[in-house]
Image 1 (cartoon, rainbow, N blue to C red):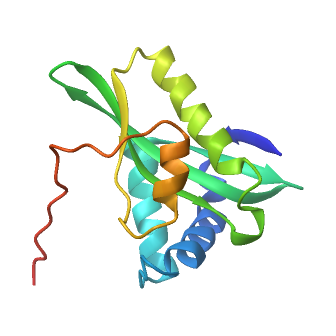
Image 2: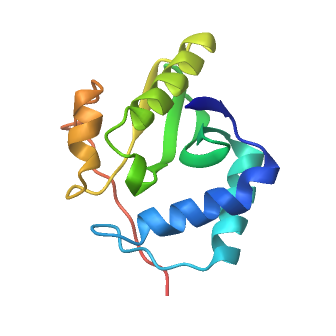
Length: 144
C-alpha cells in the first residue's frame, strides 16, 4: 500500500469511491458522479488530499484544508473514506498519520473533523487519539 498526494487525474476514481462509501448507513448521501466531481474540483482548489493505493487502484482518500484560526493554523479534515474491502487494514490510520505529518510541517495547532455520531468512524477516530469536543456543536440550516 502506498500513500501519495492526489492529483486531478484521480478525481473520477475518488468520486466513485466516495459515492460508494458515503451512500451507506449512517450517511446515506445521495449524489451524482457529476456533483461529486464538482465538489472534488472545489476541494482540489482550496485544500489538499492524499490517496491510498493498492495495486495502482485508489482504495482510500483523505481531503482536508488549512484554516487560520486565532491561535494559528488548524487543519480541518473534510472527508476520509476507505473502500469496504480494505477497511481494518490500517489504511485510514495511515491517511490520518499523513495529515498529522503535514500538520507538524506547517506547525498547525490542531487537526479537527466532524463525522456522523452513529458512524463506526467515531470509534476509529477515538483510537487515533481524537476526542469529542464537549463545548462545540456542529450546526446546520438547510436552505430550500
